[in-house]
Length: 534
Image (cartoon, rainbow, N blue to C red; front, side, top):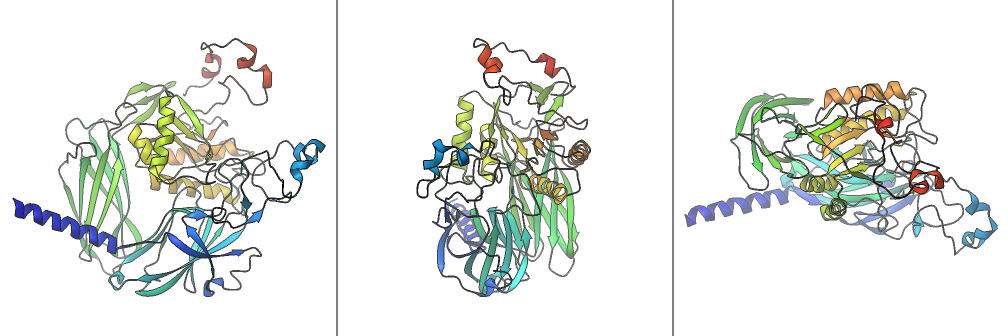
């Protein structure tokens, strides 16, 4: 028995050592250069070694870089009251050295534009013939990447990690990674008031936060996993996307095994044998995985979680993934939401990307546990992420605590932005929704989804009807609506109606809460009965 235990310990330690050898943590010191005049690309800054140092993950402002706040500082967000700029009583707060902006939390410094971040890396010999990926968990906003003097590409998701496949560019030896980060609104305009970009709450920061790493995997690997729980039949449909860069068709074995997170109880392994074709095209493997008799369901009272362990053997190494999920069914029935067939009453609040200490979203689970525990202590079970999408850690915390989340595609297309008129934002929102569903779709807490908030655009109804219909068919694990606030669309599962509230926009002292004695008997049935959905 002791010999067996010792062998198992040796195997576990060997596995941990192998994982560390296939992972390079890029956090720490990077060099930086601010590209104020947009000269870096034409002047080939990727061939220039910078000298000024910053610490990543972090923002430029955190590292003491940027411009002093002045009357000419460029802010992202709508200012409704211009009296601060004009009224004599605010004159002293407009003086140099005593600038005090009343519209949002004022940062110490401000930078809007492109910044280049650079780091030298050494790729080990055992990474030869590996699929190498650069993982940037939460950049803000657009990234362009160079490896040495070769440009790799550009990504501009506001909601999900930017990942770059580098196996064709990173060979064993020394290399320079150059990342150009640009936080300006350009062709893609999600709306200047979107909480994903506005200075109103988090700030329109520039930098890279969360995990920054290089990861090496076999050339035949698991790309994505989507798990679709079927509560009624006690099974999970697994859609596993695999890719093969080996140059030949390979016989493969894919193993799946589910484990209850709380107890460690495991279900039987399912083994699938197949041949994986070589090439750029991804292959999708569909497997029905039985969860045993009476699987534990997930809801706010019993947030039971499972982990699906996947292992792909292809003859060029073993690739593995672990995916957390829950057995739950979130639907609508008449005027009610249901969870696992039971009527549900949502009691929620907004989360508008409010991070006053850093100016950017937290990417650690402990922070989000603190936020969500505070919400639950006030009797709430629901958060709406207003015109933004949080990082992975928020979903993990909500899964653990049993909180129902509404996620939005990082847009408040108003005040100069609009949807449904053929601009670049229309296509970008589809892409952003795809990225969000791929990155966070397995989380049971991810129950509701909207394009974003209060859109403008004469064709918004048609656009959002098509948008909602498309994603309801693609991923039925949650319910969908068009825009929070408006418009009403026939294809939606539910309506985010702003009228059932006690303080309307601009009402001031005329609102119910200010003209009536305190009470808990407000009646909104005349609003609710107008539509046939929650």
